[in-house]
Image 1 (spheres, helix red, strand yellow):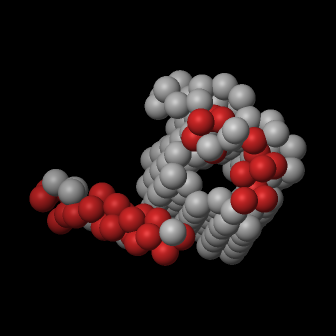
Image 2 (cartoon, one colour):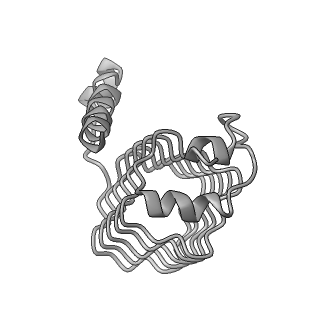
Image 3 (cartoon, rainbow, N blue to C red):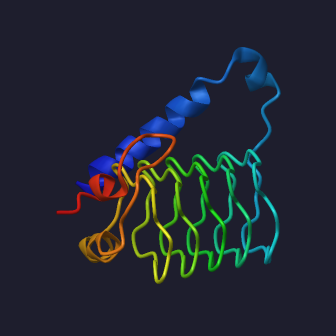
Amino acid sequence: MIFRQLVTFLLALTLYFSALPAQAATKYAPPLSFSNAQLFGRDFSGQTLSAAEFSNANLNQTNFANADLRGAVMSASVITKANLHAADLTYAMLDQANLTDADLSDAVLVESILLGSTFQNTNIAGADFTDALLDGGQIRELCQVATGVNSQTGVSTRESLGCR
């Protein structure tokens, strides 16, 4: 099942970039790379950061509110106390990330990869986790605090996590 979802993620990412208009293809710049960066407290709110690379970065107290982070890679990053309110993290890779005390309220995490991530005291009210890759323990933990409906997708947090 995980393999199928990973293949689906990679196919969707390929389709996303192949659907760019022809003029955009000639002006294409490689994704932004912030790997291993110290970005403590930086403000990226409202910015378009599609496919940006933030792996192994210190994103403690960083503001990503309302940011377009579709396809972003934040693997193994410290994202504690970060503001990701209403951020679009569709197809993002947040595996092994520390999201302790982060605000994921109203965020879209559709088909994102979150395996091995920490969600201690994380605000997920209204977050949409539809088809996200999470392990059973993470789902049980998140279902204990899941509330709300995502304002962008109309999907309830509990429904997107498959809570009973």
